Amino acid sequence: MSVTVIARTAGESDAARHIPADLTDPESVRGAARHVLDQGVPDVVVHVAGGSHSPSGGFGVLGEAEWMQELNLNLLSAVRLDRELVPSMLDAGQGAIIHVASIQARMPLWDGTLAYAAAKAALRTYSKGLAGQLAPHGVRVNTVSPGGIQTEGAEHLVQRLTERFDGDADAAWNSLVSSLGGVPLGRFATPDEVAAAIAFLASDAAASILGAEIVVDGGTIRTI
Image (tube, rainbow, N blue to C red):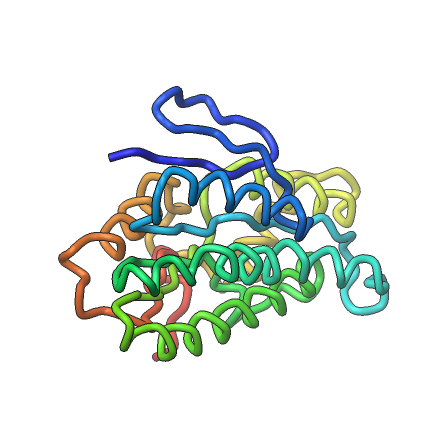
């Protein structure tokens, strides 16, 4: 099995081939896709690009630039990559696509990540529609939606919220957990636990699963 990673910078693993690209730039995505297809049709495409860099404060502090930045990274980057790679997968008549969304699509944190949450909600809807279109042609599309995850991104969010608590990081952290309604598991999930859900959806064990969403949130979302 060969793994290709499309990202602005290379990761720490030497096991994957790295293609430098900016997924917010359509031309950069086209170039990266050409490199991927030169090696053959991908069996699995996992889209994990995302994040939020908007200021805290909710609707009033989000201008045109902030909205476009969040939509560009969290929704349109996936659309662009699919647009370049899906046709070859349809020709092959097989493949799996997994989009990584967020539980904020269902429970947005208006103070810190309103535009991010809206973009991830759009990604979920896009994924559901794409799944119905591609399924008859042998290509499965599913979504994984993490909740709180132990990552640098979560640490950065706490840092941004800390500004609203006069530099009190503990208060910012408690505010974040409280805004989620708590985490019944008692901790945030690990990246490896999210990766395991993605691996399952990419495997033959999930051959009849499409248009689904697997939530990895320690029980944060309590509604049906």
